[in-house]
Image (cartoon, helix red, strand yellow):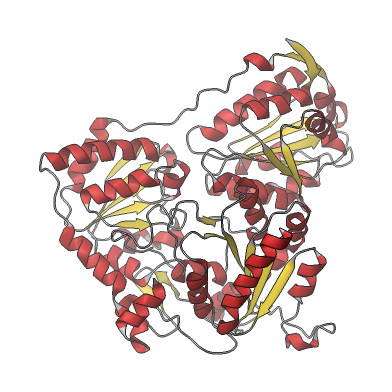
Length: 593
């Protein structure tokens, strides 16, 4: 046993739990923890410019690689309330992050002390566990329990609130014998998986819906193996995009009201059976259950018991970690295949593949107008970035169009804030991904408003040498809200353009992002025409290599482009022409490859 401050015990426990990186902003009430981190520098720290930004950096760090848990740190009061959005985002998408806040001394907590707020109560609805540690000797066990909860069952965030005097108090603690608690994950039984496969055998036109839980469980290879064994096509959700490569013959497209493919929706409507693994049946994917479920049976496999039947009642539910379930699915499917018990769905798979390559289900991208249409921007991005790129995005028409037109080939190469969708998330999340992986090809995708929300975090990228490319598609509008306002026959309070007295050449686009980007220590390029985009990307890559800072490529778009979306998966308004209206099939398909 050794005597140490409780704050030091917290740092030592985090180190034993595998933490090597934290993001945050120091302050008076959390300085004892920072003093311990300085004294025992096993955990690197990146200084954010906004505490919400630190929470999103922690999210990006967790999402980048299996096993990561991002840590964000802030002082008392507004630091904790600033991190609520990050906690909500992490909770909604089943992402484990640890948020640590300072707090007023215990004797001052209920006396309106400066920056004293009940962050434990405020954060409870958006965390797996929120706790204020009132006894110094409980600090190491609170951190041990935090990591156990974050990793067990459905992953999620935890907040630990540490009063100043608790951090400073001396305790007895033996870190040398410390061990993490065993992680609990529910597991499917062989009998359950056999029943699921027996039900699958009754289907004529089955699909697998692959959700973010497959990525969280690091089970994408197993998913592809199961699909190939059975020959059943796969529909990834937005959070599950990359669990099967976009060019795999069994990848049947995405389904939904916004972030979807025409062929994906058509395939879902043609199916008669769906096996969902690690997904939530989120409403942007399903639309109304009446349309989504009509004419088909469902099996739902999810790690969280309360998710089974939450949106609609499946015909059969299994509570299980996705990896364990898929291991059993692969094992039993292999046995059945050798015994000749599996059906042959090759005709249905060929039908899905034909739909995927038919001009009747492809959207036009090859526009040559100036200002550019976003569809053409994404076509140019596909050609320039290749298959190894990792895209990061959050919300808006930029994200929706990105999901419709870009391609993803690997798990954790579409890093997206799915349910919460807070503006500003993209930039700090990209920095977190870069901190987790120094070599990955990272491209963040934002509209101008998302970019402006946390633009100050670019300085973090410059200071800590975290290079990546940030594509900003600028229409000087709150584009998604403008499009939704069409239902109210208005265009109200969504225009971002104004005459910038310092940048008259911007033609009323308003904010001069290039000046801001350079002022924050980064590099930027503005693009007006499609032929300028590939050279801009090459220049950006050269600058990243030379200066090790983020590089922003701003593409000036036409002000108003309506992106395909609708109220149901069988009622999508396409707005723009389809591929059949503009080019022959081989050319169209080669552009999309």
